[in-house]
Image (cartoon, rainbow, N blue to C red; front, side, top):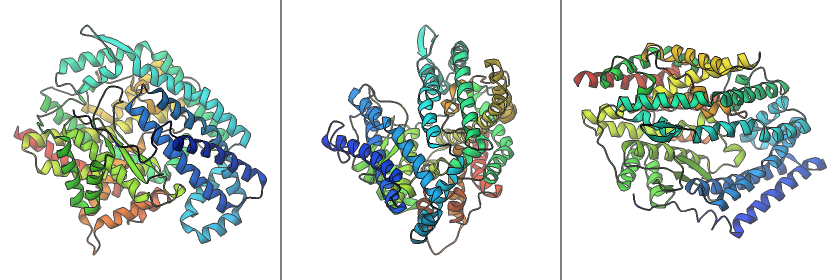
Length: 581
């Protein structure tokens, strides 16, 4: 692949530049000043909000810039040290956050007066005041933050370290568990089976370490949730996601209702693979021969064109991101895997990290990440406190944008290509809906059982198998499930955000549900105007109110079914294409 890299110079000249070090020093000084302002008792809410917005912008830019440098060159010690310096200020930020929450809660009249003049801040300040009910004393919060770094965060790093470095031998070669898992996409079933069996042995070998790490993290979460007056970890999760339990229940009910459709898809996939029933190691097996390859320029043209079919401004935005080097597109030595979008408040621009391989999947990744960048662009005019949106709404623009490009790809493909592209789409939806539901069931039960005492590895495996049977059902061979998915998924090992699962299903169905509305609603205004207005509100309202701005009730399962119906329509197309073949 050609050597092409993103341009970070508009943000800072370098990590060792005066501009970067000055901003780092300024952030440290501002955090100290913020703390002093509150403790003096002579400050004002307006001044604190102004300082908080400025500090957030500086911190986000510093952290994003340093992370960009680390992820494109993991051996760069200067970059790693710079990122560590930004993260070290996290303790000071936590203290300031605690003090600000107390200030907002203790000055209701000043808050009301401020909101009368600045109504956009009302929800954010109400959330902060509500957060005071779930906050320990300043000293206890400081202690909790300190212990988290040396306790739960260390257990999280333990899981991450072992799962990224543990190895097993396969056909005479020593492979990491990450490499073994990557073989799940291999076209040869025997290769997939052997990789799956080798992988299970690795998890078995390290099960005690993973088990005690998960026990410690979930135990810590339960203790802190209780101390912070939460009824349960789910309630705290919903508050962070800015949704009500009614919305979560409607989402989960929709996932459960549509399990038969996904099981039928898995049976269709088994037929396409020429096997009686899919095993767990067949879930990601390739189907069909989608010989669709793209150069970087072709990817640029296709994504920009498809974006433009929905909104001409989005098409221009995507083209500009490619043309002005916002994107670091290709894999190279020292660069991490995966893809992400990251925002730089200092210049009101995003940067997109990718590992483009010339496939349709690589094009889809550009579409997804540039969707995030468009979302950031829409909210970029707002101050930090009104710009930060929850995880539930974070996937809205990315899923929506990815689906626009997917539809374009299907329309120009032949039957063989359609088979592969559509199967890949439903395969992804199956993970986001079925596997996410499985993870939700598992985490809910782990919390319930952990409240009674520590669990052993065999208990965790039994719970995982039961959850897989409840969700995948007869779509998978029950003799070849994956008992150690609780060790695989790093999301379980987060104390800061429990139930790091259902927001993905929320994002998938919310994005598709919005697309469904865009094709049905008749209005004098183009739908993309309503869509942009919705995105602009994601940082300053609850998810329910954001949806309501577009006439959507997300507490009603009927809306979630609209997104699910889109998936079902392609599942039907896949079945028809399979019968043709």
